[in-house]
Length: 379
Image (cartoon, rainbow, N blue to C red; front, side, top):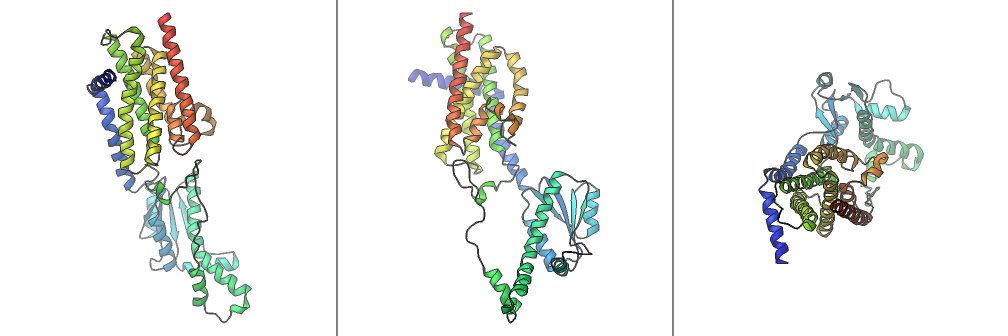
């Protein structure tokens, strides 16, 4: 046991003498810090300029205020005039402009009574018609519906229940505003039946793929460690080690590098609150370390040369960013996802079966790596 601990310390010391590995290690917290800073800024997939013809209009002011307060995916910019909003669109500083006319209350009531309106309730100026902009119209429709719902309630109550003729509008609306729905209409849960809390996505869409990016970054560190080992082996650093133990030493070098990077990754995720329960995170961390070590060991056995592994690594990293569920979970590429360790780590966060799949994947990669090393020794 003491000898293994000595090996662990020496291999760690060897890693920290590599400037490239130290830079990789420092880049993880720097990446977390940079994305957190960016996430606090005004950002969104779509930028919408808002303007009111009458800033004193109560209905349009309430709509604009609510839209401005919720900017997680759509970025809203409040403009003083309609011309200013249109100028932002023309200058490509905004993707669209929503202009709210005066007398919004009367316009909405007219539309609800007749289902027709000579004058538009909202005027939308588009630079071009894109899918995100079409989706943003759902946000506008939802904001308008919140204003229409009380009017529809009052109109329905007056038209269908003559018994309420003697009840004032204030009394009638007090029943509407006094109704409280304690149970949520929707509940979002993960495959392991864990219910998603309202604050789970508080970091915004920029921070959401952070776990996936960091997991690929950790795997990159394992591949870098494999290249370090190949360079040292060529220089004769491990010439005193028995030939039968070189494969284990190579795997240990990669595993220790992945371990160091994984610990920093976990601490960084804990710092920004992007973790599940700590026991599960530790299980996932151990699983990911083993999967990455087995994968890097197999890939180093296949390449057997620093130049080849160096050429393979960049396109491999790009493929993992696209194929693995980092930003999107592409159904057409689902089978290819199972070739890479990040798939098991990311899916296992809320799915127990992927923990089992990860163990199987680790065993298969380790077995293939061992068989390749045995074949090469016999050759």
